[in-house]
Length: 399
Ligand SMILES: [Zn+2]
Image 1 (cartoon, protein in one colour):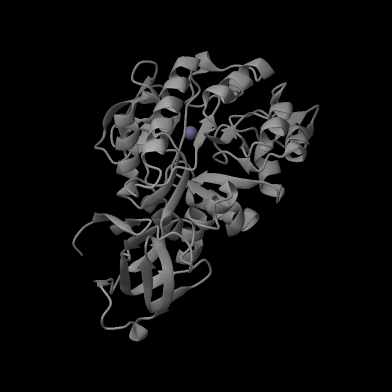
Image 2: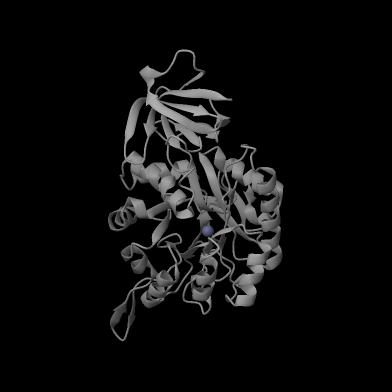
């Protein structure tokens, strides 16, 4: 039995922060939480004085990092990208595909299956609940950084083939709901536990209502690559953006890297959706955790060359963004500084909310007795000092 105490931290709970508090970890599980004064002198202690103790971050939309993209489709690339994000506090990760051909999708699924099988109980990499498929069923007008040449239509033959090649790994699927076939796809695969997210979409308001009825529960990177108000014969018609803000059935992703959305828009989302309906995502590409320079977005073979500078990845046109280079610690920092939310709120959007959307909140997403000891320790500036994956210390720097 491996037992130790994370001693005398400021523990971040979903709705409060408790100073001088200790968390007792036993066999990878949070065994108890108590005031630091109550800790037995015989316990093995890790001193956390002056640090925040937070549940590990849960990133449900991330394409790569550390110089790797998940679409590289190799074990080395996937482990490299995951490891880069782990050092920034990510303890649960949902690797995300780009719109691609079957060959690239299959390579990614195969490599991911091998890693999930070999890492089942290993505690050496963040937990992988599954994969987020972003596309290939998206609106050509809202492709954003997705390569339009791989966009397809959601015919039953096509999505069944992708589903079969995925080894049951699909956890989230971003599909433009207005496409013919999208609604029946959602109805069928909701039953298999797939979460449907509306994104890269030209949907009209009425399309979104049908999507919600069919079981869509999320909107992908709010504001980016989605329809908003248009005018038809002078009358205003709301789009996906307004529908996502209005309807409680929808939880919204936001890329809170401080570049995609300026402070007033972050504040507007917080005010309209409320903290509990927001999930922070990095949408990071391979340049995350790397110096500025040129990087391929997507696979090395079939991707697009983009430039990283000023904390963001730029498409060659110089107009649009090609995903972010953010890590989860930065998202929390941006929400504190730009959106001016409380620390416990920022952390909840990065931990408990995504865990709940994935249905893994019984084990993940908060510091609670009986949950997995996925824990990060950071300072006042959200600089990560230690990371624990199911009780195993996986990252440590002097503080
Ligand atoms: Zn993305």
